[in-house]
Image 1 (cartoon, protein in one colour):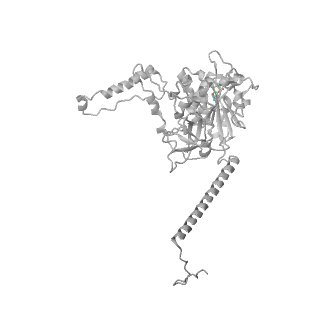
Image 2 (cartoon, rainbow, N blue to C red; image 1 turned 30 degrees about the horizontal axis):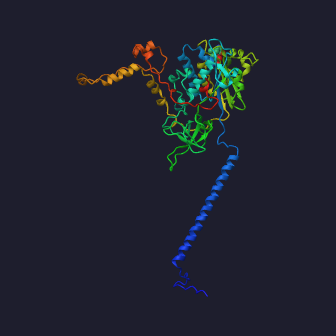
Image 3 (cartoon, helix red, strand yellow; image 1 turned 90 degrees about the vertical axis):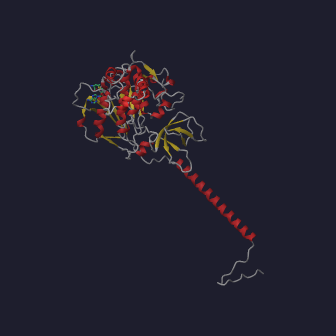
Length: 486
Ligand SMILES: C[S@@+](CC[C@H](N)C(=O)[O-])C[C@H]1O[C@@H](n2cnc3c(N)ncnc32)[C@H](O)[C@@H]1O
């Protein structure tokens, strides 16, 4: 019969004496049991997480914000043919790109308003697989305009991957930069970045992307090198120094933050193709033609253009009438009948004609207060991301345009030792009058030589093309990429 527990001074029964061996065994058993419970809990959690992921994947993608309304503009490529020199052709293209960005245009359509190619203006093939087909060729001027528009829209650090040296881009290094928010500098901090998948080994199901930072970012999908991507940057991890990111749709930065994220470029072979090849499922719901024969803009009530996908079409030298006459598919004879609205944006113009690149700025500015997007952009404070005027990158171009002679002279000056006479000069010299350095690379060279530069400055300029990087091979797989067209 087991001994009855002995009573203590407070009356409670005491445990019978246990050997150390038994105590240890009991502790070990308890530990084992706790370990098992922990493992079971972890298993349960992992199972629940897996179920959640599967559930998310099976659900239709729920977006936090709806896609905002879009603005598209169409301009004829032939406007480049009217420019007097190759430099000016490029400059006109740059003006279109600047106007598009200033007014947050989402799509630029370059269309052919002439149709038949003359001997002077040949058509070029731009889709290798469509050789011989009429849709595979396009006017040279349209192709050049589209190419420059794409080049300027591409963040600088990605251009070497997508734009090999090409004669269409010969002067694009001199054009004014777009300075859009998605052209992020290395030190800029923003949730999204444009990038390119690089040829670097990563774990299965992952790849590395160059997003313009010092180090490549590890992204969550295995994609072939050379593809342009939009990356949502993961917050910096405390445990790992490796920067990670998630690949997202190029629409997401604008949709989620309201930031302007550049424009898409599309080529249309005719006026009609502007409408029929719209990238939006429902097409353009509000269309506007521009002409000095249109209705005065002053008759258009404020906020009266309520739109999901707005399209504004601009004509070339001969206007939209001629573009319509040159279209084989369209049967109407008055361009006014083609559009929901046909508008004169400057009824009391003081010049007989307004050029297309000028009309673009006037129209986009004048029409601002007539627009009422159905889904407006979400509003965020972007002051950190887009510092104002002092940060426009102008000095970069000055670095580019340094004449070899100027460089040499500067070197010589630096090498000349200070003469005693010079050091003894008592009065401080008045600051040298520096002739204003013009940002316009196309100013009359004779004028420059008189004021500032050595006599042979014109042929001595060293233009550093930002598109020249040896050893880059793979281009984007995207159909919109014009860099692969020749
Ligand atoms: C050189 S103009 C063509 C000439 C023609 N007088 C016209 O407006 O149709 C080139 C383009 O600039 C635009 N444009 C010129 N003046 C305009 C105006 N007053 N209002 C709206 N658009 C204009 C039109 O898109 C036009 O097709």
